[in-house]
Amino acid sequence: MSALTQRQKSGLRLLITGGGTGGHLFPAVAAAQALRTRQPESEVLFVGTRRKIDTTSLDRYGFANSSIHCYGLKGKSITELVKALAVLPISFLEAVAVIRRFRPDVALGVGGYVTGPVMLAARILGVPTIIHEQNSVPGLANRKLGKIVDHICISLPGSEKYFPQQKVQFTGNPVRKDILELAAGAIPDDMAETLTLLVLGGSQGAHGLNKIVTEALCDLDRKPLSGFSVIHQTGNADAGWVEEKYCSAGIKARVAPFFQDMKEVYQKADVLVSRAGATTLTELAVLGKPAILVPYPYAADNHQQKNAAYYVEGDGARQFSEAELTAETLADVLSTLNNDRARLVTMGQAMRSMARPDAAEKIIDICIRAAGRRGGDNSSTDSRPGG
Image (cartoon, one colour):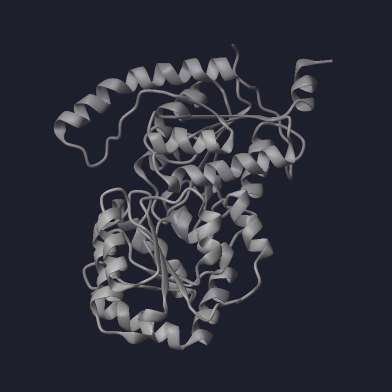
């Protein structure tokens, strides 16, 4: 049996790199889950940094991971920038070593600064390369990599203008298996008499958002809002005072710095107040959850505002800047939605119409084709790096 035939009979060896935030990591996990379902004999290796969110999440999902030394470049001080640039040659050499050990058939980059040296090393070593961009405006790493990789997957219409057109394919943003299962089993437009408000400030929380939401629910004399129960992800810094404020106001609330089991909290949510990270929006669309979006004001290139615009234009969400949103405005919006359940149902349906639940499968199709394997939509032949 030839070496190529043997590789085709064995599963795909997929190297995935990126992370640093849930927005980068969770779509990568979703793609890996899709491959593992389709080809259980496949092997996946995540290459990232030693950041806790990466290692903890990957351990939870049962995927092997390796790390290299790497630091971000954008928005750093001169000292931090010099340090990051000085480490880059080391990052590249460490990436080369990881790739030579793992011998991947294809490399998938999902954004974040660690993606740069790993995907460059993969390209130089002859590994077929693919990047996936979650946001409406690509990050620095993906913008640079777009010039050298073989294929580019995008999540939102409009982001193709940042890349070479002939490489771009619109796949959508992958959603983790447990969220897809929840969406598949959901009772359409089922809503409890007492609404549950889910507040998501992103994996690091959001102090400004925490303050506005708690003031709207606890400090204003709005009886319609007393009908809400609350699930609130605060980030580490604010969990204590947020929980105390709800308790003092007599509001039923579940407060945590970060929720690991998003399936469980999504299942209970009727409406959200949320940042506008691409992965969160993708999950809300698949689940058909209406949302009030408050983009993170310091997101690079204001990409959260542009992410949110797609869903607002599709009538699935409302959007406010943090600067313009007051507790009184938020209370008015929540009160109106609480009294107009038909509007909430319509918003949820609009969100669901914008979902791309097959995004992970599309990306795996592209990975399989790029690696020259059977099982994608087409086949081609590519070599993989030597030892």
